[in-house]
Each structure stands twice: as structure tokens, then as C-alpha cells.
Length: 282
Image 1 (cartoon, helix red, strand yellow):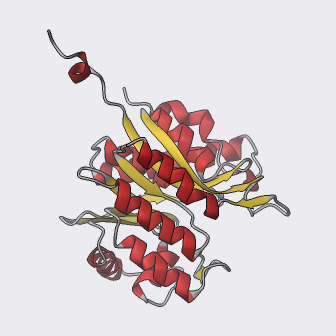
Image 2 (tube, helix red, strand yellow):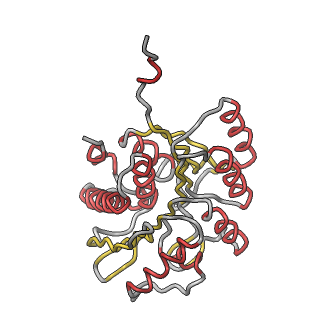
Image 3 (tube, helix red, strand yellow):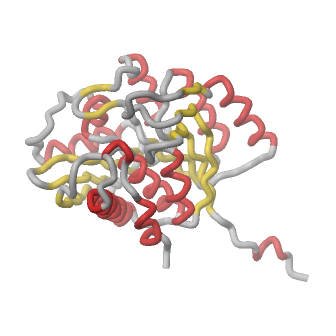
């Protein structure tokens, strides 16, 4: 008699290490529905709980750092396995250490690791990111297969001076190669301004491609979380890297335009729910 377990459909699963913001469309509240649309199960590991993201004038915050090890130990006792591990914002050296341990314990053969090294924007590191914390992030980046830094974070990781515009593509290609030399095989430097366009620099070890799209509207919080969630889902679904980057950038542009049409306040992020069906594989 045929073993029915051999015929069972294997749904892909991703461990998503990130914070939970109840309002404002970012972090886990973005990743969970986007991964679901991509037919991937999102298994959250909360690093902290926010009532809303910190772009608002006030917020509630509960640090989950000391609970994370016990949380992950139960998954290990249950012998849970994952197809991918995705890492978002980490607020302390201890959280980075716990994440390193989680990757070590759960990233067996065939498990792909994506790290979004969220450290800063507009040429500045976030207030919580001390030089020591940035060094810890470099260690975490070495464990990743894919990283998605913005231009500021790419400069922090490579020690290059930041400038908002005027980058030559040869410089960007060299920066991507420096990031790959740190460990990850695939790198995308996001949101490089080229006139009225934003360019994502995607390097996969074989080639470096420059994927350019016209700036859709004003910058909004949470778009980086949308981007990395799409790449995380696609990485376990074996979507070609450049195709995934192109899809994520195009989807975000449509979400920004739709948010502007609906006059969604900027701090509320992008109304990706309006367009989520476009991500569902046919």
C-alpha cells in the first residue's frame, strides 16, 4: 500500500524574526499577509511589541528579548523545520546574538536565510545603532544567503562614505561585490536615486543588474518590509532573483500610487491590501 505521507503537499514555511507593530503597516503585519499570498506559511518570532510604529508621535513598546530563547527552545523540542529564515529589525546586541543562535539551530541543508540589515536611512544610522551594534550586524550578514540593505546600510557595512545621489554604476557594482564577499551570495542594494528614478542593484554571483523604476510618490514607512517579505517568499518558491526584485519594486510602486489615490496618511504606510491579490501565484 502506498505511503500517503509521501504524497502530501509540502507547504513552504519561513521563520520570520521581526517586531510586531499593531498599527502602521510594517514588520510582521506586512510579512504575514504577503507570505500568505505567496502560499508560504509565516511563522513569527516576535522581537518586540509596538502599538504602532515609531513614526507616530507616541507608542507603546514591550521588549521581547528575554522571552525569545524560551520561545525558540519549544520549536526545537518540537523538532520544527523551515524552508527559510527571514530577519527584520533587531534592536540590540542580544537580539542579534539570539538570532545568530536561531540560524545556527534551524538552518539545516536547504534552508535559505534572508537578512534585511535595518540600521539606518538617509545617510544616518538609527539612534539605537551604535558602532558596536553595527559590527554585530556585520556578523549576522555573514550568515545570510540574501541581504537587502538600502544605500545607507550598504555604506555602513562596507565603510564607504554616503551620498544621496551621483553614484556611478561601477561604484554600485563594486559595493555589491564587497557585500557578497562578506558572505551572502545574493545582494540587492535598494532605493538608489538616479534622477527621477529609483534603482535596485541586484547581484547574484553571476551578474549584477540595475532594475530601475520611476519614483511613484512620496516615501512611506513599511515599504522595505514589503520588499523583503516578497523576496523571502520568492526565495523558498525558487523564483529567479532578478525577477523577484523586479516584482517587489513594481508591486511597491503600485501600492504607493494607490495609497496616494486613496489619500492614505503617509505614516499609515502603503495600502498593500488593495493589491494583494496580484501577488497570488496563478
